[in-house]
Length: 363
Image (cartoon, rainbow, N blue to C red):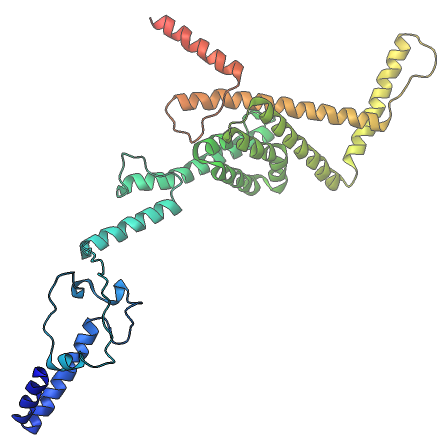
């Protein structure tokens, strides 16, 4: 009642213009107060959240209420006014990040995103992310090695085909792909194969490119995954031999399309005539009577398939042993690999014996 009488006294002692200015001022002040309090007139107390009220306007328990304007003092007693929530809102005392902190955070996020997208290997623990020289080395080194190994593969295939050096380079064709796969991962090894095929296609033509894919590419593709997963020697030789056999079968199919004749049957007939002549010579030397037996075409084809499979297994075994010896020596020289090649038991035993003999000579 005292406040209402005070308002009446103020109204009686003021002119009309002063009352209008006072009412406008009180309305503006009440609107600003409503905004500062988080619009507590419109939101119920049960759904008031922390982000509706700024941290600096939240009152702690035991803190005195700030002074209100005369209009707010009157509105406080009206029935449509909702009471504020009595629960204490937790105050966030953490300091707000400055402009410099935001800049550093954004820069760190950009560097990490670029390192995740482009770099194949994260920086070592001792190197900071802001070291741009180290970052560029890690980003471009795999691409450089992929190009170098692909050029080396194309050069060996070119010399082997043009100068008839396949018996010398046959076990070394897949080694560049194995090196990149064990050093940078399976995807980079596949990139070596694709770039090598492109080089051979541009320099030697599509026929030599397809022959490299069927003769060596499929076998290298399967063996690189087996070596990266560190399979045992029997698994590597079996999977590589099957891949090599599939490549030879596709090569016979391609040859049949080129010569427009069934190459597999043609080889069977040629071998059948050759084997029949040999059996006839043996029959004549031993002076046996009767007609010399001759094998059927199906039997000859089965024998040829078994010989080709044995040849594939032997080729894969020699390639695997040479890769183990060379890549293990490269790893001992200080080159970092993601996965080190797994040596067979005999090679690992021989390596231990060699190390023991070298130590005994030094001491």
